[in-house]
Amino acid sequence: MMWMVGGALVLLVARFVWLAYFHRVNAMSRQAELMHWIDIGRVSNANGGKDILLARNERGVKIDWRTGEVWLMNPKVAEPFADFLAVERWLTLRDMAADKPAAAAPAPAPAAPEPVPDAGPARDTLPAFQQKVDDCLAKAEGGQEMLETKQAFEAGSAPYLDASTALSKAALELDVSPALVATFHISAFAALAETTGADKLERAADSLHAAARQIRAAGAV
Image 1 (cartoon, rainbow, N blue to C red):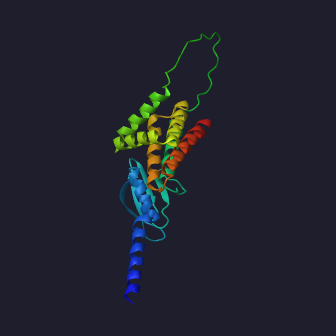
Image 2: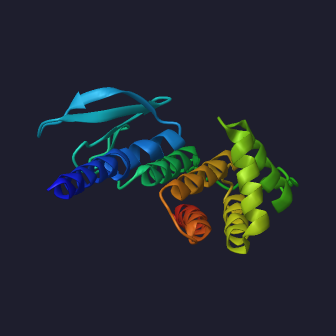
Image 3: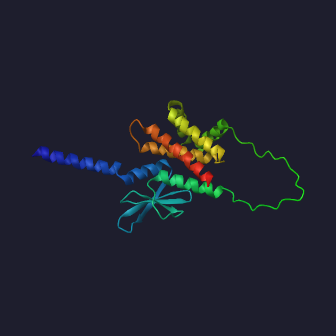
């Protein structure tokens, strides 16, 4: 009889541990913390219970306490996001679109145009751009540790190095700022927190490749 009681207690403890750590809401809370979102309180859910409110700078999100879905509140988006990686990518692409200058109306051709040589600003070389990305990463909260992690991944993983280089090339060609590229690296590090096993670096590399594709897609619009 005692072993049955003991077995039941073990099952209860195991269920409590699972709910406390592996439940999707808690996983999203840990991911948000890695990406510097701050828990600012709770708000009532229309179906009962309390959703988790978080903020970063002027942005605001909530985590649905039942499903773990992430809802962007400021700016308000009608559909939920699967996780904070999706939120970061959406915000980054939105900022890129906002920074893109509007096309100017064509000016009438002058009667006697005089060509004026204009070389324009010099474009960074790839190594110089990658150094700027590292500088931006180092300036973030916990940046020195993240920079050392990035450099260790690039030195020890060929797939990660290839993905990092592809991302920098895409950003350099399409005039994306080094700060936004650093944000994509932070997103890749956050993905590691939700991954176990030998494929952790492969998933981080996949995240960087996806970011490079999104940059090129946004530049083609």
